[in-house]
Amino acid sequence: MPLICVCSPKGGVGKTTLAANLTYALARTGSKVLAIDFDVQNALRLQFGVPLADERGYVATSAESSDWSQSVLSASGNIFVLPYGEVTEAQRLEFEDKLAHDPHFLRRGLSALLNYPGLVIIADLPPGPSAALKALSPLADLHVITLLADAASMAVLPHVENNRLTGEPLNSRSGQYYVINQSDNRRQVSRDTTAFMEQRLGDRLLGIVHRDESVIEANASQKSIFDFNPNSAAAFDIEIIAKKIAAKLGIQVGDGTVHAMPRMSGL
Image 1 (cartoon, one colour):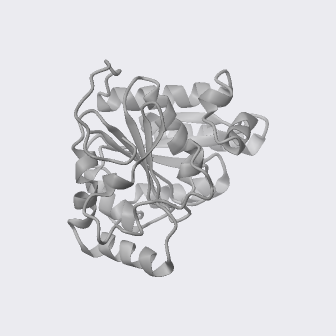
Image 2 (image 1 turned 180 degrees about the horizontal axis):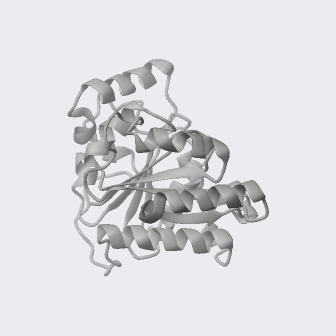
Image 3 (image 1 turned 135 degrees about the vertical axis):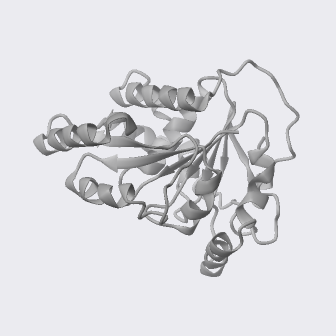
């Protein structure tokens, strides 16, 4: 059960799109992969073809339900998604309060999923510090921190390095790593920022995803970059990053073995 947290110190960096495409990339190895949305924007589901009008999710009933796996939806093949869902303000506040103050709340809700043999879980976290990030970090095997090749990301990088997202190191297992997203070789500032971050991050940098219009078009089509344009630069970049993650976590290429599944709506 590798659990990968995809997070960012600020919004607007393409974190959700990266989380979704990493899900697709790891699923291409043959693994069953589940993407979980912890962001109230409830946007992750759209990356997997869930209709905009579909308001299902796990958060609205999370206080009453001890098994959130019942809200899992099947996306395609060996890909599954657990949407945040549409919630009232009261439901959102209750969810975040329980994340912050009940140490068993998250582990109990995810227990069936965390214990499912061979399932790779990718969690899309809200930008910046959050109750979800702080609660999930002790369970995570690896953190992927998404940055842009711009001055704003460069400015907040010391906050991440100084443990300002949760008040403590994000990951005590396989570590925390970085991805520079939307690097644009046509712009001097992007080239300079990318070079600076490459030097500063060293081995902590998983890879660079180059700016690619195919990503925007794939999102609009509710398709992965691999389905929309498998020969694009972004598809190549994300594939390499996914392979590095798989190597660090020992994720094996699927062998077709079928395990008894817990009862879930999608799995």
